[in-house]
Image 1 (cartoon, each protein chain N blue to C red):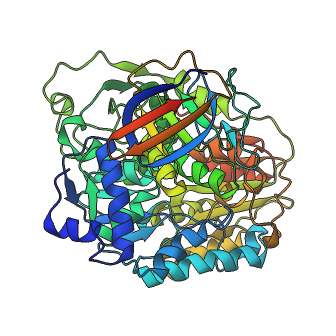
Image 2 (cartoon, helix red, strand yellow):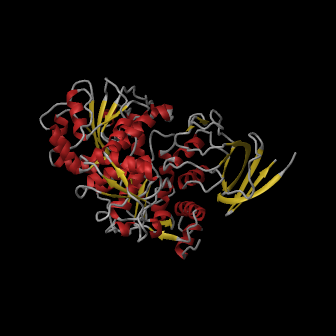
Image 3 (cartoon, chains in turn brown, cyan):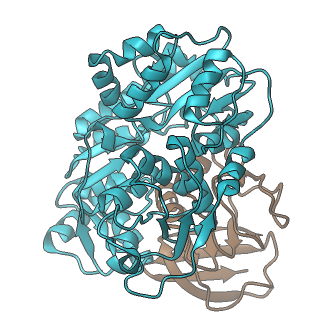
Length: 137
Length: 423
């Protein structure tokens, strides 16, 4: 099994592991995800019908909504929050606020492309201050 | 990030656990967005703690329990039940009781528990260059644009800013981004708040998260029209402010709005663009259940207008006319005899909430113990593009958008009256 360590920019502190869920499309937590089941209901071909619960969610960027924090927090309250989030670019302030409330670490701008990543591969995200490490098993 | 000694005291817990939790969150947020330091804020419009969301009221109770106090004047955003007259919206008393628990937490924290999306009509009127924070995008855009205060579109952390009196210096707190990105020229007559709301919806869609500069008005828009315009812009896009040269501070003309840079070519907004927004929310339906006025929550002037349109008349049997306003505006309107006229006509005057804020149990999962039953609504008629979007998305119910006067006529006639184009 190959093991890869990629550095990234730390956005929300914490450490979490889980199976990767790779979205080719931007996700809006308000509208694209059913908070009652944790399932993606938005029209996002690569992840539609899949559950975010416990995953390390990998996506290119977040789609804006001022209410995103509330839905990320509600996912957490219903036990369906992702374990961690890796974003290609800086996520919306609302997503950052929801992730801090829900204790979901966020890393962005990874130093190497994550194209080869497949759903289900185990990933650990560790964020301390502005430094983040993504470990792929 | 550079922190002052006082800010470091908060971060390290010497000012108690609430200020520490709040400061830790704000520092992480500021670091993510490259803020060099924090600024002192003068006002915060904060989260209500919403009774329909699971353990959401508890978010505010938890802060009150660790002795959180507002360091600056704070108002409270719209909630999920009328805490006094919950029966009017068909809510169970359990929901109102839970919502009142949030009011208790706010009282302890020293915030003005306005439960409204228009705190400015309830006396919270920050002035030019006041750094502030708001959880409600309608409040952000009104205060940034009409009042010249400085606010981002925030989420829960508005309450952390209220507790610490600080906010990271980024986004609309910086003068450099408070300048136009697109120019619009209104080339069609507009009648009343509903047309301004549709203009806003059209502009917001086109401008994304930029700053629209809007010209070509036949006369200076009223405060109510500017309010409707901003709410529309913030609903369809991610914009946080708009500029009407000569009207919104401090931009005297188009050149100032673009900070001296060459303005882009204007995008013309014609009658068809406005009509297209009405047409977008026209879920044809013969059976109507609710006609709603007051999104965002009505001003005193709007309450006067509704009373003039309804005075001596009677809402048709079989449907309900809801008029929503903050409790402050409602009380002022009651003293002026306006509420009595509205109620005599059969209207329901509702505070603390609105249709899209109290009827969306279908798309979330409130605590089953509350016994909330999502209403089976056949159609809702509204005069606001914001309400139209969220009735459709959150309540998942057919919605019809029309003018304010036409909405009142709908309520009186019991059948839908579409918007008449102004000439």
